[in-house]
Amino acid sequence: MLAGRRITATGAIVAVTVLASLIVSLTSYELDAAILGGFIPARLSGMLDFTGVLAVPAILTPLSCALLHAGFFHLGMNMLMLIVTGQPTEKVLGPAALLVLYVVGAYVAAASQWLVDPLSQVPMIGASGAASAVVGAYSLLFGQSRAKSIGPIPAQ
Image (tube, rainbow, N blue to C red):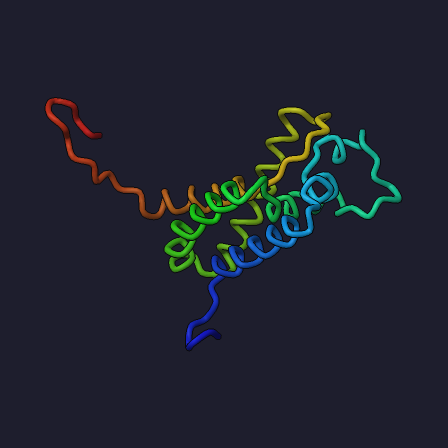
């Protein structure tokens, strides 16, 4: 607990992601991290063999790739999106459900990438898929049309 406040699941995800991204960035291993920890569809398809290489197991790369980002703007936008939508969503769903939603979103994003090009050797990195799952839940929970009509054009 920090100053009487509990750490939320959203806060924990953001903290771990920012910490991982900072470590990778400060050690200048961005490319190595993307190759060894990013989601590469060809690895899952068995067309790219990492045997003997210290790499994240292919089945876990949808999670590890969510910790890696292509710069501070990429990281910042994903974390901003997660903070804005994650906190209210977590209040409704609870921390465990938010974590499950985030993990499922990471795997669905990776599966979608694999379906598009199962032989791709290009690493996918970033938390956009996982964070988008949270944005989707937020939209379903809180989405209401609040837009006002402008002139003769209806807002709905």
